[in-house]
Length: 135
Image 1 (cartoon, rainbow, N blue to C red):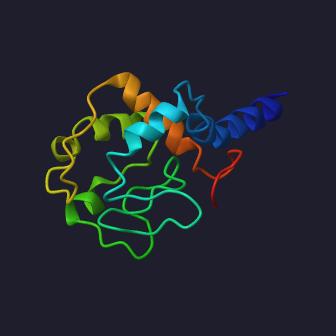
Image 2: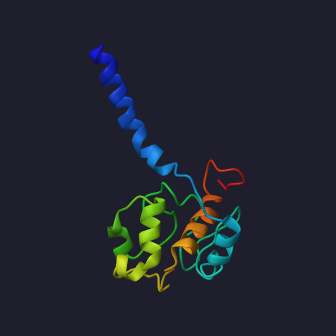
Image 3: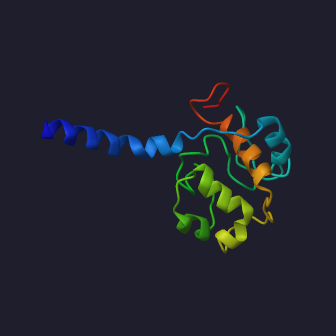
């Protein structure tokens, strides 16, 4: 019986990080697309997305920071060392330069929580494993 408990605990420990990333998105993706219009000058999403001034944002959630291939990150972003979750993104996007001093991102941020939630819902549409997502 003890081995069964140990096996269950080990399975839970392995699944916990994935469960944290599989968050329910409550925002409005259409409204999030309008918020993303502020980001389009530097970032792209979708099937033909490419790095511009900023990296591609496909498959953002669950990705380690500063890991998009062929993108030249600032040293500050390389040192940031987070996994992008809804919460880490929410904190970052409110004040990118305050959260990561020295980042190349000059965007002032999105202060409104509802708009951030909508933006997250939009970006989730461009994440692997979501219907209509890009790979």
